[in-house]
Length: 134
Image (cartoon, rainbow, N blue to C red; front, side, top):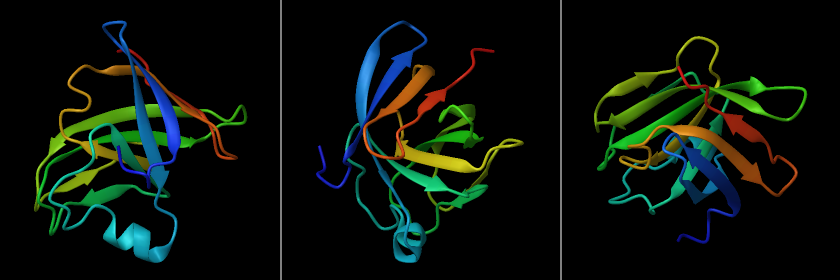
């Protein structure tokens, strides 16, 4: 697991299993601009969070990604997950579903089984991400 991904998240999948993933925020201009561009792999179970993000590009990417899209942070600190773009391929674009403004990028195949919830644990920005079934 990569030490840059310091935020833990607990995923509950639709089949009832649970999985722990690690996340990091892309906050600075450089972090947001570079993202995962040029990486030959994405650490298994690690996600990069982009706030204020309505679309992603996969230019100069070497690997496909799964992208979880969420709405804005709610008053209770949670985020409502609005969609999942599975296995987005290099040199393509992906747009957020209506209302989404946060993208979390994972290695393709991370969410072969649809997550029901993803709860970020710890830190001042901890929040619960809920993916509605249906």
